[in-house]
Amino acid sequence: MTNTLHTNKNQSAYTKALFFETYEECRKDFLILTKKVKKKFPESRIEKITFSKVEDPIDSFFFQPKKKRSNRLILITSGIHGVEGFTGSAVQRLFLQEILSGNFAKGCDYFFLHGINTFGFKNRKRVNENNIDLNRNFFFKKEKIPKKERNLGYRRFASFFTPKFPFTFLPLEFAIFFLRFLGIMLRIGITNFSNAFVRGQYEYKEGLYFGGKRPETVVKRLKRNFKDQCKGYKSILHLDLHTGHGEANDVVLIQNADLGSKEDQFISQVTNGQSLLKPGSGGAFYKTAGDFTDLLSKILPNDKEIIPLTVEIGTTGNTKFLQAVWTSFLIVAENRIRHYGSWFQKNRYAIEEKFFRYFYPDSEFWRYTILMKTRDMMHEIIRQFCEFPSK
Ligand SMILES: [Zn+2]
Image: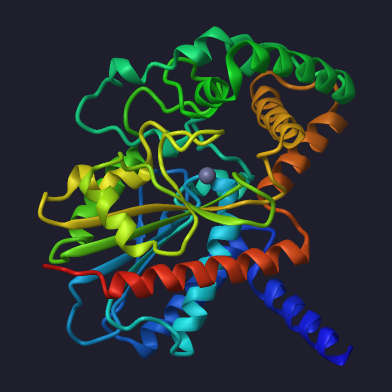
């Protein structure tokens, strides 16, 4: 009994010190911790990436534990989907605390990017100030989006994904949505539906998962920054933190790199014993277009060993049928209200709050559980990365 109480107390202290309700608090704590680490490890660097006159810059921290640079670099990034930054930031700050207490792998250098989509983080949105899903915006070679990335499934059901009129009564809207969802699902099946819904689309600028018409300024800045940051490193592990997708309270790794590619082989060498979803593994899992984790392989020289992974932290679950309907409803309704308004303010607030809590639950059990799982998973990947054969 005493033991349980003790643990609960610890849990509560733990989550309260890391999970905040505003972007400003997360940012402040990130800066305080990075200053402390820099004091202890003076080779480290605190920097800002400015990309707009209006939006806040992205805070970054390069941590070098030894006098001499390592040939391995670990990138830990958060908040490319703004609202998911609250949890990503908590995980990053837990890492910084562990660095301060000496609990980290010393054979690597580390680069933290905190809250990439600063607008979305501040305003509890997935998208940025231009309704762009930055995780679908990493196209480089051509200014125009390649033809094969045109999402015909989205086009077919565009009126379902983006109804172009104000939101009415929540129960009525949900009932209509449920029936249409069911109808589409029966016609095209779950895989085609997921593909149409979340893969990304480049035609409807007020639609869902809109990848933009050209790279955003922040994407161009990141590209330049990463090129500089990665100079001199042989092996680079990229862990990009997300929330929302997957089973409740579960953490999985998602690989976007094609099967049989060099990255695919490297990934299997550092993810032994971890749950890893590969493209084409079926069900609701999909390969996204213009993914952030594809960035490094596109911009760095061929001789580097790049290991790009998405760390996806499940919240209340979206894999079972009813969960999938409900979370799709929230995503469609939030976007619709942002563009076309709502008859009643009360409904607007209700949708915004439910949307926020879907990506960032306030349950202490969830926060503690996923924090521990994510930390353990990342430590294990980093441990394998340190032993990764670098020829
Ligand atoms: Zn995400």
